[in-house]
Length: 226
Ligand SMILES: C[S@@+](CC[C@H](N)C(=O)[O-])C[C@H]1O[C@@H](n2cnc3c(N)ncnc32)[C@H](O)[C@@H]1O
Image (cartoon, rainbow, N blue to C red; front, side, top):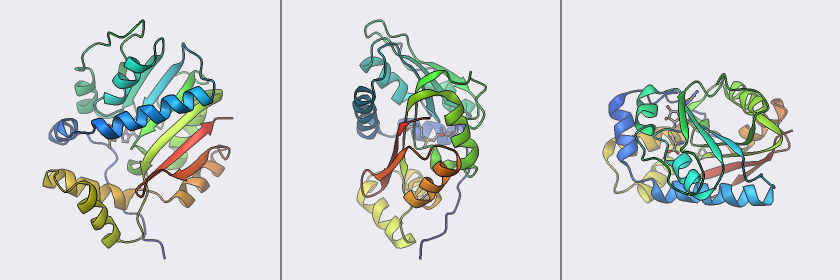
């Protein structure tokens, strides 16, 4: 039987928690996310001057890497945590090509207030497991994406048991602080299984998106909206 989901708090709005997250070294995972997104953008014909939105952007490392990599893209990072957006706005300005630096806004990813049908790319790393009202999140993704726009979400996938979650923490976060290890464990328990995500997407009218296990602990959602 699947272990039931145990939701963790939605926002990382405590300043100490935001600082600890920003200080952790996510270079490799963030770069892997950007590499996969760029690959998908190429295969899905995303235009050179694309507008992209990153939901649950945290300290904004992913939009900054993306801006350095994708000349001409206009990138918006969204987070409902003011502490995170304060950190995101401290990133050095982008100096690559003619890509403007990302802009960062405080907003709920389930209801951003950004214009409908306006993004060629809607992406997110690690927001889904924070959100209990996944239907509202996917509805907003559908609203924001242009018809045929690229959607790419990556997140943890819930393991079968607490023991399996402990094994993942030991295997991949052995050298992290106790705070981060605990957060990682709680995040694993709070995440969704691929089958749950498929059901969410079907219900949101996003059934054309694919859900695949990208690693032993991550799932990817990708494809065209609409
Ligand atoms: C695990 S962090 C990931 C940050 C970033 N995407 C990264 O990969 O480094 C999750 C972020 O999602 C944000 N978040 C959670 N629920 C949200 C919501 N409903 N709207 C906007 N941001 C949200 C949290 O505040 C936190 O900054």
